Length: 92
Image 1 (cartoon, rainbow, N blue to C red):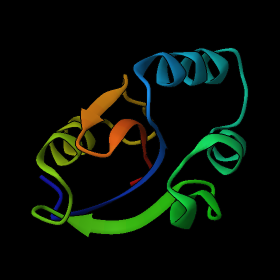
Image 2 (image 1 turned 180 degrees about the horizontal axis):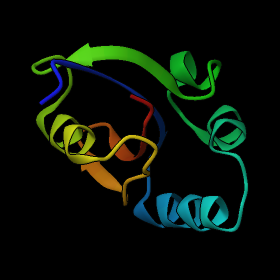
Image 3 (image 1 turned 180 degrees about the vertical axis):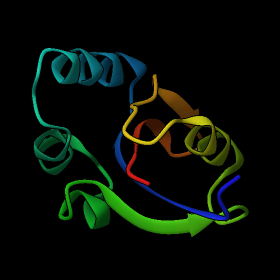
């Protein structure tokens, strides 16, 4: 089990928005481009959604669980947290 992982995410307020973005990704649109254009997390959006490396206990539980359970290179279904709905891409 990895001690630290690297992920990108796209954060939106509505589940319907997250599902629509996931559909766009599945149709071939670039994750980073969509993060820059649509994510409400302005800090990470500027970096294609990149959150950098983080370990356990650094993110809210729902996000952390989903992120650590993803295989490298995979993209999650929408994950609901207190901040909204995240689409997470595990980078390492």
